[in-house]
Amino acid sequence: MRIMFKITGLLILLVVSGCASKIEREGVDYKKASIANEELGVAYLARGKNKVAMNKLKKALEFDDENGNAHHYIAELYRRLGQNHLAKAHFEEAMNINEENSSLKNNYGIFLCGTGSYEKGLALFNKVLADPLYEDKGQAYENMGLCVEKQGNIQTAEKYYITALKFNWKLPSALLGLAQISFDKRNIKASTEYLKRHHKIARRTSQSIWLELLIARKKGFKGKVGSLALKLKSYFPDSKETRLLKKLKLR
Image 1 (cartoon, rainbow, N blue to C red):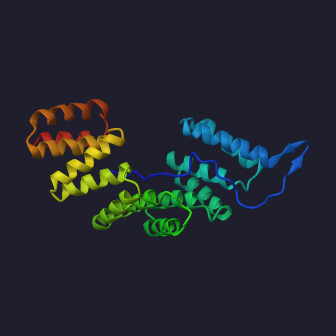
Image 2 (image 1 turned 90 degrees about the vertical axis):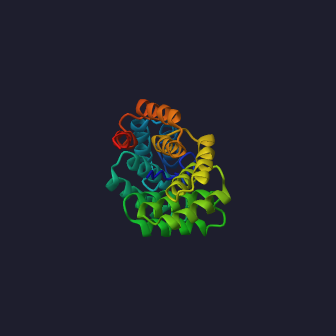
Image 3 (image 1 turned 180 degrees about the horizontal axis):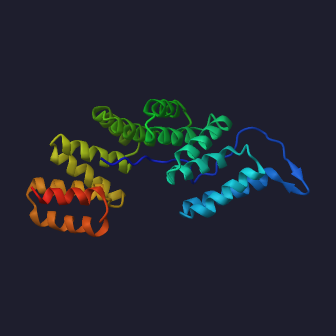
């Protein structure tokens, strides 16, 4: 089953709390230079230019090694690159500097759940939810659902997803999660509805196409099954779902 955590705060240029004094040397304001490089790094990160983003974010730390936001974004970039030991080090450094930042807690919670530290990750999500100023509570519940689903606790995941949609009905991972859970519970009608809502707000993935195919197969729509199988093989030839498709045809 798919695990797609929702990252928050990556496109928001957060401000380091506190009234830090300016550090000037030879006409250079190191704090401003650090923030400028941080902002450039975030912009490149959003565009998928990881190498340039990393260079800018590291430059931000050269100017100010206590720039918590730069540590945060470097951690997220390392997480995307699968370099978990480096991601963990920068997440922890960011937490030491910006421990009250709820977006940081959310993203560190995602990292922890993704690396098997489920209870620590869930504890951070609960702290995020306790923040009265944090606006994306639906996303926090969605991430909690993904975390406990990865643990195998499907019943609790379902509850978190439902709660998430009460805050924000346009949460794709919660919708897809509920579509899969409903299908597994043989509630084809609910699964179809959740998946339809998911497809209205998100691009089709190998997971969503596979589930749509299984639903069509249950309903006996052979033509639709064939077209979805072709789409899965064409768009996602190396996916787990395409491999499952081969096994399905052998039955």
